[in-house]
Image 1 (cartoon, rainbow, N blue to C red):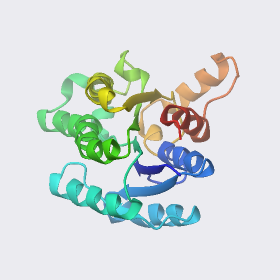
Image 2: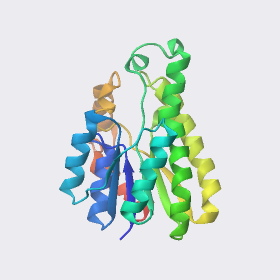
Image 3: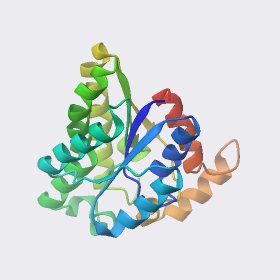
Image 4: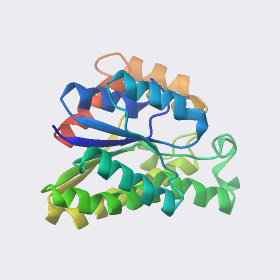
Length: 231
């Protein structure tokens, strides 16, 4: 019976979709956001496959777009308990060249989309969750925010900022019974993951060295996120 917003589904392989499927299996009512016509069809089809028709366009860099999206979602769901933030972006060339070559505009683009969007969404979710007695927010991070991972570059810097942002949001929102957590999934074969140079090598190394001798997938992450969301 929880009311959940999922931001960041691109296709069936998305981590956000793995989380959505798990929340749906546990009885949550779901809404989705998308950005741009390129992914709209995929998101609407996936949402429909689990009985959701609440799919709203949202540009994470446009405050008016975010205000409109949260207004539509609040009306459509009747409130909000859970928020999944699975939004990140960096220019492809910034993952292929040396980090030192990152240009100012590309740096701020990565930080804005991948980190500040969580602040902006949490601020809009806060009154909706508070009205229902509390809630939970989960975002997606990665080891590249703690260590220098070859090819991750400016996304690693963005994830480091995201990790810190998560902690400060948790401190702000905790008194209102709103939890904020991050899941560090490791290499998962998603559209975004496969754009990282050397990704297949990462997969091979994880499968070789992990205790289970395999990689995690979006469904594994979905179960972990559902636990943190307490759906």
